[in-house]
Structures are given as C-alpha cells and as structure tokens.
Amino acid sequence: MTAGIADAAQAVDPAAVMGLLPGRPRLLALGEPTHGEDALLDLRNELFRQLVEQEHYRTIAIESDCMMGLVVDDHVTSGTGVLDDVMERGFSHGWGAFAANRELVRWMRAYNDGRPPAEQVRFAGFDGPLEITGAASPRQALTALHAYLAARVDADLLPCAAETLDHLLGADGRWTDPAAMMDPSRSVGRTPDAGRLRLLADDLVALLDAQTPHLIGASTPEDWHRARLYGRTAVGLLRYHHAMADPSPSRMARLLAVRDSMMAANLLAIAGRGPALVNAHNGHLQRHKSSMRMGGLPVQWWSAGAIVGAHLGEEYAFLATAVGTIRHQGVDAPPPDTVEGLLYALPAERHLVDARRLAAALAGMTPAARVSPWFGYAPLDPAHVAGTDGILFVRDAGRGQAPSASGND
Image 1: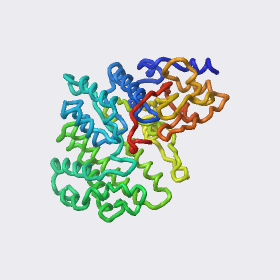
Image 2: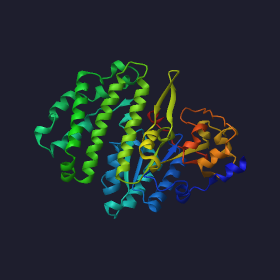
Image 3: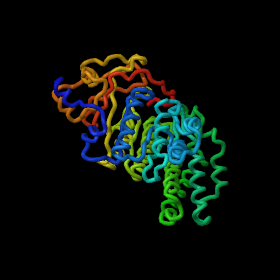
Image 4: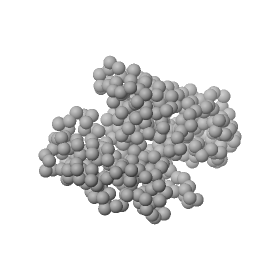
C-alpha cells in the first residue's frame, strides 16, 4: 500500500503537471482547501509563473469579483493605476491584502512590460460581485452595458433610457442590505422594480447578441468582451437578488447554485479567449456536486467546475490541493487512515500526486473522511480522489493570513 502511494507521488513542476493530462487543457484549475495560507498561495504563484512561461497560458483567473478584477487587468496590461490602489479596489473578499496576491500582480505587470498585447498575460476575477453577507447592486453592470450599447446602436433599438434604469435601481443601499441574507423579506429582489429590471436586462443582453456582427466591428476586442461580462453580471445579480427574496426551504440551495453558475459562465467566457489558469476553493472547482449543511439540513448544488467540465470535457483539468497540517488554526497531523494521513507519511514537504494511480493504490480500502477542527478548512473527500486529475499535497501550510469572514467557503 505505502509503495503504491509513493509511486503515485512526484516533484511539483509544470512538466509533471502536464504529464498527468492528455494535452494542454484550455482551463487548468488549481484548487485550495482553505483561503489565505501563504504556503499555498506561494506555491500557486510559483506554478502559475512557470506555466505562463513554459506552456503559454495567457490568463490567470482567481475567485474574486469579476467586475473589480477589471481594475487589476488594466494595471497588469497597461500599467494603469498605483499598485496599492489596485490591490484595494481590484479584489473582493479581502484578497487584496494578501502578500502573495500582491506579488502575483507585481509579477504579471513586470512580465507584460514591453510585450505586445497578444503575448501578455491577463488577469480575471471570475466570481460574481457577491459576498457571504449579501450581493452588490446591479447598477454598475447594467449601466455599463447600457452605455456600451447606447454608444454603438440606434437609440430606438434600446429597450429603455439610462434614466429609467437609474429610477428603477434606486438607492444602492437597498440592494446591499446585509439583513437580506438572513431575512428574505428584507430583499428587494422580487419587488416590481426588480422584476422590470430583470426584463430590461434580458432585453439589453438580447440586443447585444442580435447586434453581434455590428458590435464586433464597432468595438475593440476588449470592449466587446467587457460588454458581454456586463451582461452576464447584470442578469446573474438580478437572478441572485430574486433568489434572496425566496422564503422557501430551497432558498440557500438556489443562492449557492446561482453563484457557481455565474462563476462557470465567466470561466467559459475566459476559456473562449484562450488558455487560462484558475485558482479558487476546491469546492468551486471540483467535478462533483458540492454539498454542505445549513441550519442542520443538507444542501447540494452543482459546482462551477462540474458545469465547466460538462461543457469542456478534457479541455478542463482540475488539480486539488490537500494539506497535512495548519497548526496555527488547530489542524494537526492527519489520522493515518485518511487520504491526507497516507500522503503525510511520505517524506517530502510537497508532492504532485497522480490521482488515478492513487485511487488504484487505495482500491480495496475505504479511507476515512478527515474531520476538520476549524471551519475554514475543508479536507479532501476520499470519494472525489478519482475525479481529480492530480493532487498537490503540502505537509504544513504554515502561518497564513486569515481570510475575511466573507471569504470562507
């Protein structure tokens, strides 16, 4: 058994990663079981840098607000903005405070400096403008989409004037009220104004689609892709707010599903532009259904990775990350009968594990599911091992930077 597990492990490098895959996938996703740990983020940076340089990946996408991410993309591609401001305004969930994310942005800017646009590496957030405590107003996405169309199509084709959107949106505070997350009656998502906004958003996206030949010719490629992002985000946010106002028992499952669906739509759009690297929580990137217990009841929904994998097949690859210890959070050495415990017995500090060979080595035994003593860490599900393309194992995650409360999955 031990020999078989050791045979499945090798050093972490791009050649080894690519050797696990049938070819270079369009989306290569690296998951993490917890957020904000320096050892995991530094490993991500190292591996992503090498994959950009050696395998010519051209986008790095992380689990952060897709609209805020445009600030980072402008900086790394053209030098717009000062790094301190970019880190504050370009990331959600508090990710901009993490030193490794700052280093990633600094490296991307340095890598792009002097390169033609086709050879630059771009940045993307692929999460919706959502927090655990609530969701953003759809104002930014809706008004940006309307402004894009108003500048390029005949006015009589627009479903409404900008002033109509402004009137229906009202004060942004009524959309972002954190009390609505726990009390559906506090949400504005099913008011008459919200209902009309959903119809108008649908009309604007339909106009964007119908005018595709003209708009592509009348836009820069970047303006066109951003307009499509505005449309996806506006529709997704209004759908999310509608679900927030749902008083039924399926409310949380619907909210979680809408979020991952928005993530998947963004990832598929990113994949459409070229090969991309993705970093997020394992739970968002796995090919299996996600599940959790809320209020004592089980909740299930399809993860973004499952949706993307269904669309892309072998063009989507997923590497899960597992850890042995996070001692500063009370996560000590794993029990030896867990997957983490079996990998922890290997000598090196980190490994790249061939998941299929590991699954074969585990045949005939049923590893125990590790139980986390800390809410911020999700152990690897033994039943999911064979559904990954590989596992990055880190013996000790070391001391990281605690994520904000809104950033926990």
